[in-house]
Length: 141
Image (cartoon, rainbow, N blue to C red; front, top):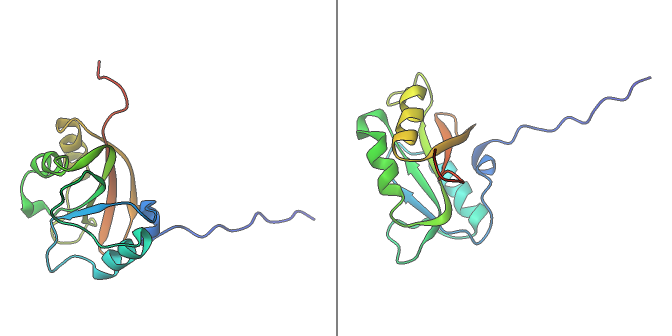
């Protein structure tokens, strides 16, 4: 008789962001439509508050972005202002079918235009999708 492989539950919510205690997370683009449960989970994971204005480099930027917020390239470039060289951005956008969602092609093109790369996506809340965006590792050719 074959034994079944253990079922590993899907990582969802803030846990899918891979954050850990002690990281400094800057939040940009917050508005009343943001998911408060996700924000609370993030603060629990990092064991601290989200910062808006900072005097030091941050490890992660949590950028809430909706289609009506304008050009995503501008938002991504602005996110780099306080981001540590080894830091990354979690661009959080409404899921497809929700008001304000971004076309995936526009998101990918926006990241590329900003000199960044989308590495993965995750469902972070019932109405929100997260996209991890990083600086490329090596020089572009």
